[in-house]
Length: 103
Image 1 (cartoon, rainbow, N blue to C red):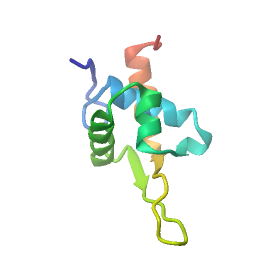
Image 2 (tube, rainbow, N blue to C red):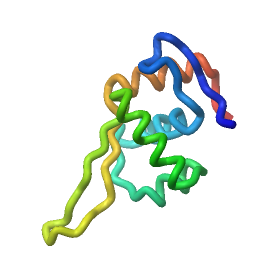
Image 3 (cartoon, one colour):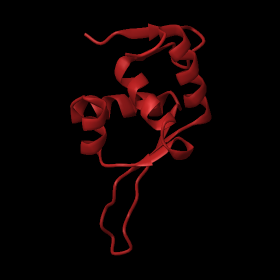
Image 4 (tube, rainbow, N blue to C red):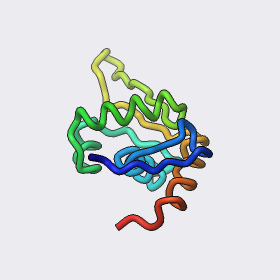
């Protein structure tokens, strides 16, 4: 079972370890955004692709994350771009303080 950080001041009231790991990954990227495949991202976070999809949907619903589909000129698909919103940055900072340092 995934641990959850519950705080009424967080959007949606809670984030779990995978949510926090994704937000931390994006905070470490330039401008809080990364164009990366789902497979690469799930590998980076150490979770399954299904867990990543659930995490992304949950953070999108809470308006903490935006996902931009990207297309090549010839119509082919490229990696999605994941963007941490300002609210997402605030939630990450707050959740990090509540949880304490990550190991």
